[in-house]
Length: 132
Image (cartoon, rainbow, N blue to C red; front, side):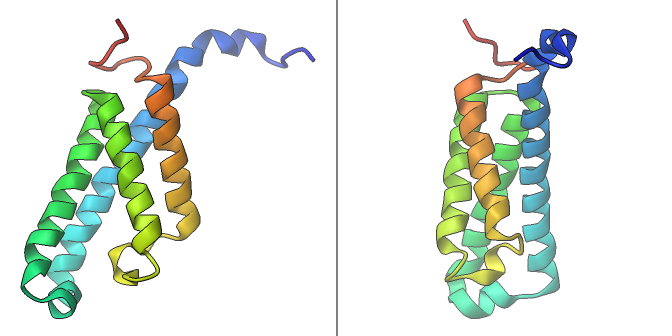
């Protein structure tokens, strides 16, 4: 079957760029959400005790690192792999710790699939990582 808009296929190199930017911004906003929830309520401190502070800070730093890597396109495949691990971790731990993320499971499944696709397709246009 013929494509409806064959001229748009010339711009297929920009598709990973759009996915990379959106997923990177989402991971940065996820880290920001953790900072805001940590400031507003101290649920994690009550539930986990003295380890809550360092664990929350590690989660925030990890999320910001993944988001910056994906949004800027620096070490993008490593960032996508870490994003995939992060999304799978949230999917696995969401039933035990519902305050960890307020997003539904389908959201994190889609984030995991997008990170896996970005890891396989590459950074796309406007990235510091370019295939050799």
